[in-house]
Image (cartoon, rainbow, N blue to C red; front, side):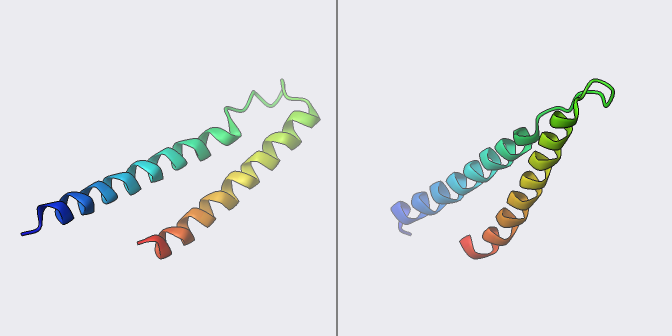
Length: 70
């Protein structure tokens, strides 16, 4: 058995998992926690909606990218 190849394979898998988790947490932080609707101004609502749309688009891109990365 080739131990070096086994260790590289396991390390690559762990690295991919760690990167995936880090990207997911980063995407979840893009939108931030919204304020209560009564406290938000119109500009804040537009900004939050735009951030949510960007977050949704990036999650879709990551889902498609995972199919080709393996």
